Image 1 (cartoon, rainbow, N blue to C red):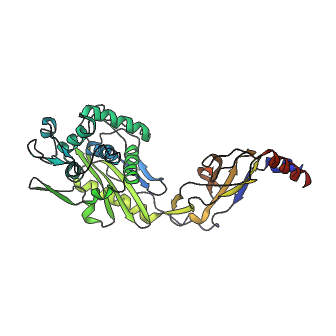
Image 2 (cartoon, one colour; image 1 turned 90 degrees about the vertical axis):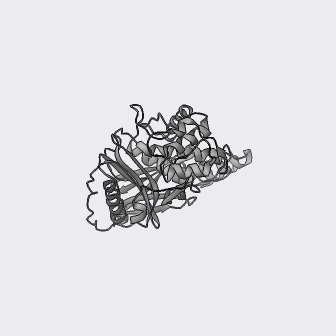
Image 3 (tube, rainbow, N blue to C red; image 1 turned 120 degrees about the vertical axis):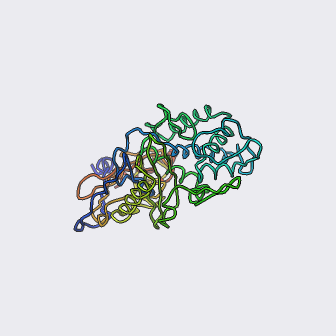
Length: 378
């Protein structure tokens, strides 16, 4: 019977923080925008949203996807920053905001990146798209394939710069995911988004992200505008140790997109906390393993686990680890072996998959025999 009880044991509970009295936390601000979303960078949790899944014109926010693919091409050594890029007539005659590149004047990938990111130049964007894929149409195909990989279910791209098209759309949620992926996957290029101005061809143009000048904690990312899309802004701010990212779409002016984004960021920092529940590689618990070369497996997370909660509420969290039982060897590191269920005052907050932190092979014949004898002797 004892052996059976061990086999059926699958629940280990523990309290992460003690209970306390709940503080009062104000609701998110109401913004003068069509759609918005605020996420915490570490936990990737949504802190506030409105119409976040409504398809809208992304305008020049599209250039985040263009940048992602160009950064990847550089990382894969298909492009270099010092590489000279030919300027096609399509790029030269691009509509909208421009960097003012010229077919007769050599331009490098590095210059084009600054022209696209800081100046939001459509000509620079097209030139980069052609450098990566040969044509803007082929590049748009790559954009949609990458969107699918990222799980951007409500996004579709028809061009690299964000010019209007009925089949060119995204959402605040998808754009937040895209922006977060740019920061995560290409930290070496992220500082480009904090550059306040850039001069090319003797023409100096400023970054349209006004928060770069008014809030010293804001260090990126991208503005967008078209008369049918309105004024849009994706902004991110670092107030150590936390980073927040806001997406505000469809405001009425440049001032409004900056002001509404600032409201959202300030609320997020002031009235929300992010706590680290577990460190990368730290055991959440141990699980008995049967027929294995070892009897016990350490289970946990391969990355730090963060959770965002309203300010002052972290002490009301409880975590319960439910392990897979019986767990029979072989077990591979990274294999899912349970779930961590987090609640606040008994109400579900989130579930997180727990994985094996090590591999355990099948025991040898003599090992299995000894295990069996040991169990019988207990």
